[in-house]
Length: 92
Picture 1 (tube, rainbow, N blue to C red):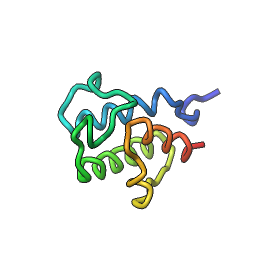
Picture 2 (cartoon, one colour):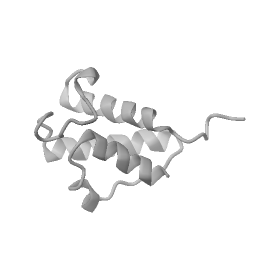
Picture 3 (cartoon, helix red, strand yellow):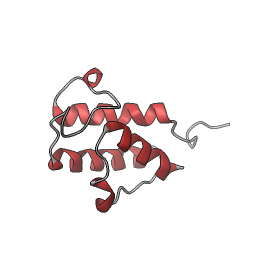
Picture 4 (cartoon, helix red, strand yellow):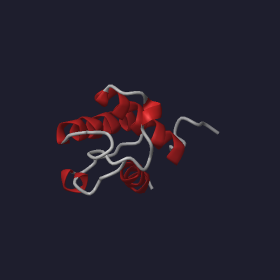
């Protein structure tokens, strides 16, 4: 059985989001927790979140999981966990 088309699990999604967010915010990935608020804990502005969305869409696209995060949904993503849960649901 090929693992290339296997579903991406939640832990991988956490890692992708944490790594991309760390690059954007120029902090260590280990400094980012799932319960962290983008705005309050990580000081991520709306531009950083847009960059994160683009990075997630690109990364998952390269892995064969085409996903589009809608602009209207972005305002509901307040924490890292919100983003992870959203991506998990969309990949469902």
